[in-house]
Amino acid sequence: MLSRRLKALKAYKTETTQAKIKLSSNELPYELPGELRSLISQELSKAPLHRYPDPVSQELREVVGDFFGVPPDNIVLGNGSDELIYYLSIAVGEFNQGVYVPVPTFPMYEISADVLGRPKVCVQLDEKFDIDLEGSLESLNLQKAVLAYYSYPNNPTGNLFMRDRIEKLRDRGLFTVVDEAYYNYSGESFISDALTRDDTVVLRTLSKIGLAGIRVGLMIGREEVVEEINKVRLPFNITMPSQIIAKVVLTKGREFIKYSVDRVVAERERLFRELMGMEGVEVFPSRANFLLFRTPFRADEVHSGLVERGVLIRNMSYLPGLDRCLRVSVGKPQENEAFLEALHSTLRELA
Image (cartoon, rainbow, N blue to C red; front, side, top):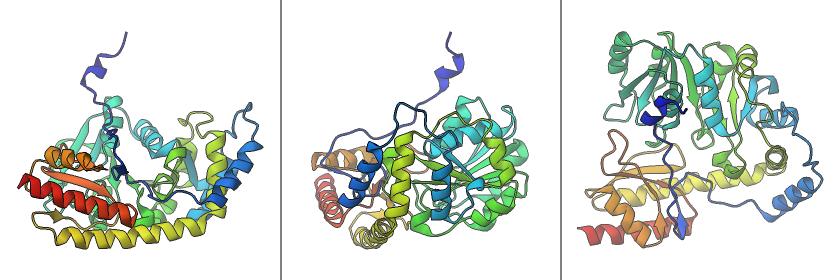
């Protein structure tokens, strides 16, 4: 018998519409170069796929640790950051204790709480898309929470929350998870706190720097915290192909990653300027690899108009406080040009 709790749950909403240009999922737009793909093929051809992978991903943790400047014993790897969010929602506090989430943000924080039947303390961001500290403290006085999630920079708004607001909420006894999926585009981090405090961990991912297809995320925390989280980690959760591919790219592909990220950041700023100059468009500053913008028209109409013109972006208007808002991932220069032309044409048609 399936749980009655499932009736109230909603699955994670992603974008599956087909289009020639896909700017909807915040992926790195640049494919791995041929020489890297050849190295990967060589290593995969030698893999004993009839065997289970290394259950603790020791070599990969060493490579990931070197890439991010963290000792391997301070790392838990997950099948994407999503798996680690589930683990933290299971491991921190009890299921009858609350989870604090400033919204709108990455939906998996709420979904993981809902799956476990945990109460949520969701507080709307302020008009600048920052944490409403006063409103959050009031809500936490009424309903206690022990776990907090922060997307940093925040998805889908693109901004960095003020650090002192996160710290003040942490001082209220909240175990603090700082999700730095877009760290490579912002350069801002809570990693020093994660390595020295028992109440803070940082999440990172390889999905935004060219490896979305292999699903590798990581949690960084003190060794004592890592040991506890490993108790709920599923066995063999990082596949052998994923371990091999990640090791090759994070050792032999570092120049590619840096070059690609730098190009995306430059295009982000150019795209921001172009949208700023487009009549009827309100675009919000971003430290990630995407931009959130609002138009005078219904978001589903704008979204449909872009799809008709072969460009897929993300309709974010279903999230609280994001009426008429859409999110566009930063693509290659020619993809960004196609998006700008399609948006201009769509808005002119709707006017």
